[in-house]
Length: 614
Image 1 (tube, rainbow, N blue to C red):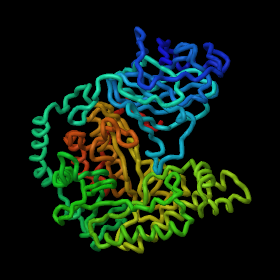
Image 2 (image 1 turned 180 degrees about the horizontal axis):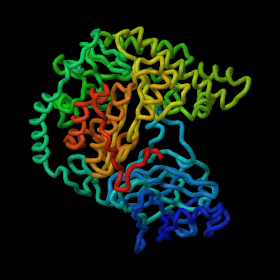
Image 3 (image 1 turned 45 degrees about the vertical axis):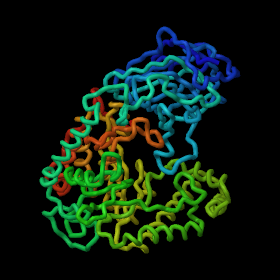
Image 4 (image 1 turned 90 degrees about the horizontal axis):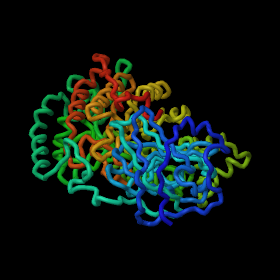
């Protein structure tokens, strides 16, 4: 069957919301067969596809099914995919809504590239709920295709009585336009594909079908620009007053030969092995082996930019003492089955032995390394607020020690409270096992916590009292609310494991926190870092990530403009200069001797939301 073609009428959301289940346009019978879309076929196009421009701060449009195609069914329960032929003028993400008689359902739609017609086969299951896949927040919430990826955010619900399809974009930049020329339902995945202008990437990995001021057009241009940056690095590094390990040479306290933490005058600090006060600044994902890049170049950039720490997920590990940098690393727990939402079979004796073996294998060889800051225990546990789902996964999974413990726990009553308490106790046991095993294998280095995503409940926050440092990934315009709460509950120093800002431009998405342009992204770095540093619990923050993500997405689809360097390995000068300015004065801000940078960045010409999650 051919895709449904349409020229729809735009209906304001306010009018749609006023329609009850029995009002509005006539809908196709609920028992209509589900139409299918061809695998790669092209349709005859209508004279004018739907075309909308997102202009308002919160720009919304919707299209009743009867205006799209009167034969589309209202019951989408048995359909597998909503198939759209579409084109965007921007990479900015937008909400894709399905309006039903019982409420609204949503996924976040992140297009790859711009100015090219694509087929987008959107899995309808993610309007109904999340699946069981994933071990951290990104891998549980992101689902990729070949032309877009989706964020599984909700709200969720059934698709029995569909009224309309809608889109919404918040804080649009430059009046982005969306065109849709065909829509259909499909039982099976017809595949998502670019329908013209392939290949869509150029030889440098950039989006081929757009231009922008800093785009690379030749190898000669790229070599020239990289060489010019290299010449500037030595002089830039000489302006900074950091010691061998990255601490502030103007400060001195007790030296122990390893990194530690100390509260001085009511404020927490890292102390480097030579006894200098140290605030950890760096990036996740620093590479020492990408094409066109080598470890020496990365290290000289870090020195020039005032970064003193190689963050998590980094392959850069210099071995020569003169080249070394402080680094943090992730403790790798064994990936034994069962393993649901990042939670292993923690009541298993075999798992307990495996944790001890992992610590001995990984941590014992590092126990005498003065450059090691410490160990993260994990990343963004995805199960908080999904405790009941996690219980069901274990109950319905293979027989294991945790399943047996669960059945005993629930024998006297299966309630949401009992389920949540069991998972909380399970998590506490997991943390304690890792902590004890690491400290036995390596008594010299810090437990840096588990890099929570979002804000955990207080009962989980209190578990952080066992950490040396509480780590949290905070994607906000300012992290002050989160840091204050953690400090108030635990009293512990706080290390921000990840943060970033990005611009939806140059073929890339904005990332989790959007700014209007590269100048605003630079302001965002200064504002975030210095507002955090003014708090007594702050001991550092690590950017995510060193390099922009691939234009066509990494393994889970993310394709963000979040790098200090782009896909051609050139740095973003605005961000670099902002980081240098902040890193020079970060210690003074933390000590209360300088006021933090106070200009809040703009997400677009419409301003900035209180939070990107509002």
